[in-house]
Picture 1 (tube, rainbow, N blue to C red):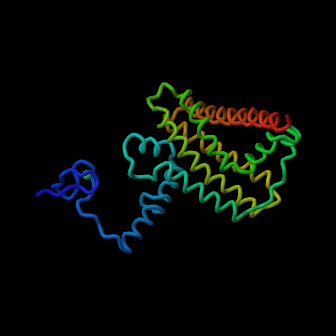
Picture 2 (picture 1 turned 180 degrees about the vertical axis):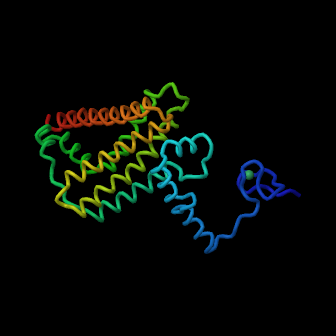
Length: 244
Ligand SMILES: [Zn+2]
């Protein structure tokens, strides 16, 4: 009698299922198993720390390898995004500083919902980054439409660089905690850092050409502008409805 795979029910002859790759005999869940699972999540081998380091040094190439050749090496994009969001949240709560209302924004938008949203966006670049994923993906897909990557593959690229960018934005909270008198400078420094990182990562993914880096920065900027336009339209509409 042949054994059946516990996952896909195909007949298994060797140590692994030919059809889905699951091991014939599962390892017992014990202390080792738990330690292994934790290590593989955090891990230096192919877990979070490894992914963070690889994405920092060589973002475009690492993501291209993930999409085209090897999905085992680095953490999956959505998992990575969730982990970086958690870390960003923890760091920004730990170094919490009271950020004053932005006077320039107040001048531009007055006491409107647009001002409230813009102010939130500026003080929470990390989270705003997540909202930027969709518009930036659309622009990137449009500007690099001659490449063979579809919308979802493009979205994975943007997900990875934005997730890594989120960790760079955590730097702002740390700097604000260390140098509370320099909030504007801290914000500017981290923003420039993350902006260049994200543009550089996207450009590198499509091949190391000057043209691609330009298109990448363009896609990122257009994504941000599109997002701001949406915020302004939504804010004004909301105020019009609420105030009659
Ligand atoms: Zn199977």
